Length: 64
Image (tube, rainbow, N blue to C red; front, top):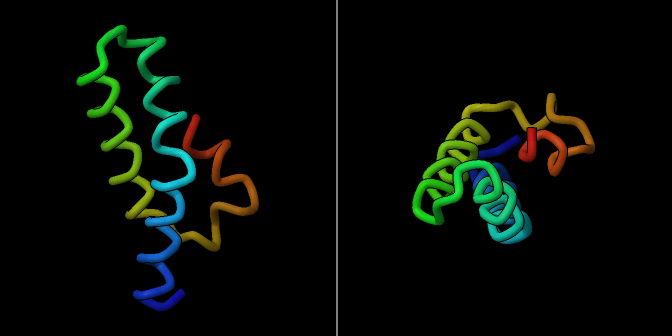
């Protein structure tokens, strides 16, 4: 995947899943700021992954 395609992949993932991930994380950490930090860490981990190896279930990966 080319650099620009990868950037678009990450941008789409953030747009589509960030809000739901924050809500999900908040159920565990009971603090909005901490939930945002957890989600940010998740997206940083996503940036280090090979999108081809994630398969079709990006949402599942993010929520795991």
